[in-house]
Image (cartoon, rainbow, N blue to C red; front, side):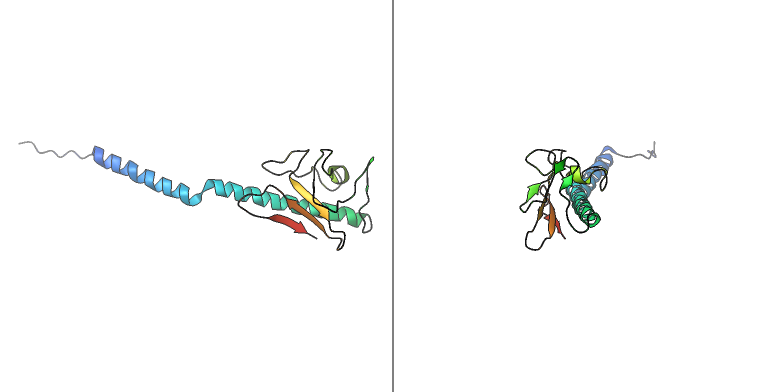
Length: 149
């Protein structure tokens, strides 16, 4: 009589292991949610950009003894009293002329939709309080990103 003493893995055991790995990896992807993580990272970048723009505007004001000097090279640029998009397009406010390269190396742009002509950031100066607000107009995950000082 022959005794079968071979040890091995059966086809059913292999299929069970593959199925278990598929379920576990699917659950991990669902819990990690990479799309949401990337959206949150882009929002964090927007927060940094909004703060950078506002800090550079205030630094320019501080360097000009507390006032916004409207002369920017050959151009005259005033801070708007209504929400205006920042960018080099003629319909937008080109803050780059005033801030680059003295206060910023380059003008920050929205990580997903920003261009040089439309950064997807807005700015306005409240005429009553004198406070300046910079906001991101293309946020994700329902967040509102704006800073006022």
